[in-house]
Length: 126
Image 1: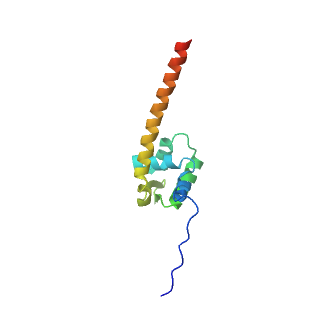
Image 2: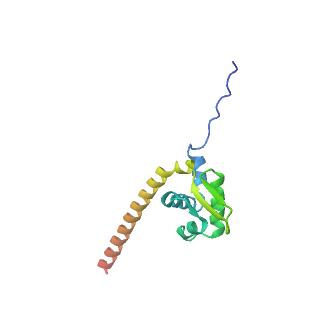
Image 3: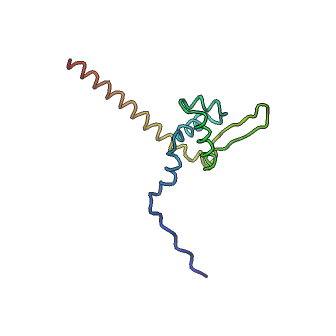
């Protein structure tokens, strides 16, 4: 029996691959939206992802589809109906996205309270 090739060790962080995939503009926002609201057509997704351009949304959707995180279902109707949804691989991120959302909400609340506290202190000092 021949010796197996030695496993190549990665010099980077073990999370590097997935973080590079997720760090593109709007990516986590799109994934979280699909996770929270289920399958959506392009226009609905564009309305829910406030501030994204049609060009950027198209680019991000293609990238996520290429990464196997979402599925593009096309129906040959007039007009054509295209629906985007998370794949099994995309749903593997549900727990991570939920955790990030919880931390984000908590930090937003803490930061708003700190700003209010500073404003009150400045007003009292006048």
